Image 1 (cartoon, helix red, strand yellow):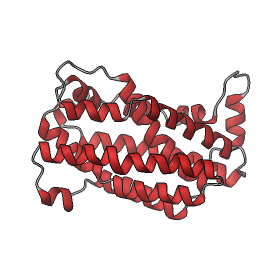
Image 2 (spheres, one colour):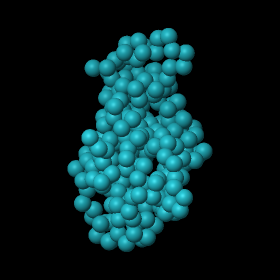
Image 3 (cartoon, helix red, strand yellow):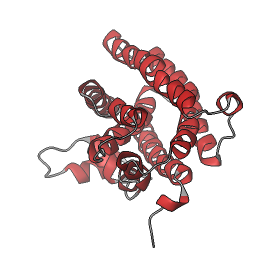
Image 4 (cartoon, one colour):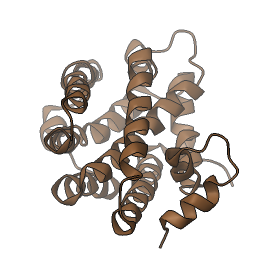
Length: 237
């Protein structure tokens, strides 16, 4: 089991040592494998077909409902009004701008209504949905923040990494823009700061819980993206 002592050992001698930096490091190689996923390169390069993009978005949309519920739990457990305001603003973006991108993608690429309303989720999608539900039902505020940091920071990093091709389909470009803009960058920085502040006040048991939840979320992010990428974009070797 990873403990506070492991964190303090890692941080010793580092001038700028944040708990979230350490959590990311102990989540390797899954973190880098997700951020550098071939699916995102194919998407940004314009090599992902419309059908493949729509299929990916159908699976990703499966997280919106449990993720919205998770944010609701976070708002309910937040220790300050300031936290509730920030999380509420993010909830608003998720249920408006991001939801709109999904819906317009389904329309543009003729996703049948049955696939939108009762999609056949991949096992990896179901596993991630269960993680979100379990965290909301059983996790404390810091544990919920740990999941949110992963889901949003990973997307920020891949969106900042990729290079968009000229003439990229507007909806694909919009998906990247949603995860690489000043407002989103500020939100991810806020999540990281608040997790670090909350983590420092935890006892050994709860500290271990957030580390495991963080690492499990990263692993499930990787498994999900491995599952949704078309085989022709899989890494060779």
